[in-house]
Image 1 (cartoon, one colour):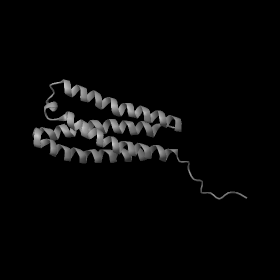
Image 2 (cartoon, rainbow, N blue to C red):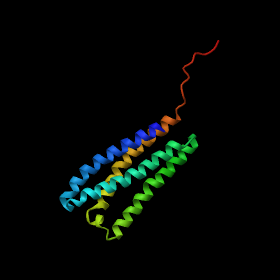
Image 3 (spheres, rainbow, N blue to C red):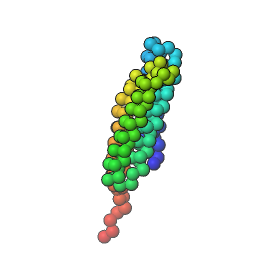
Image 4 (cartoon, one colour):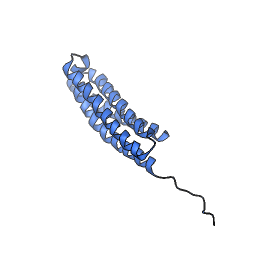
Length: 137
């Protein structure tokens, strides 16, 4: 569980850096409100990525880890898609600040990192513990 918390923190730091850079780039076109839109989209992607990592970390068996990874994929894709649909159809102030494009940027970059972390988490929990005690003769 400690490893999952570490990976969630790594994902958060990565997305914070992406939010700073993408917010600065988007602010050139949309104004200073793009910083808030970037922070909101990074937070949304971090939340679904963290939930996905947590689900994989809590799976007790190899078969459960496969199912957990599939459930994590559903959450990781489904919730951002719902947010994209909401912001493209609504008159929300963040839609005018470019949140749709920022969600896509954060999703794609976060997906790469979260997938790598999820694979490491799955493979780390799949490796058996090494017995370091000498064999009895």
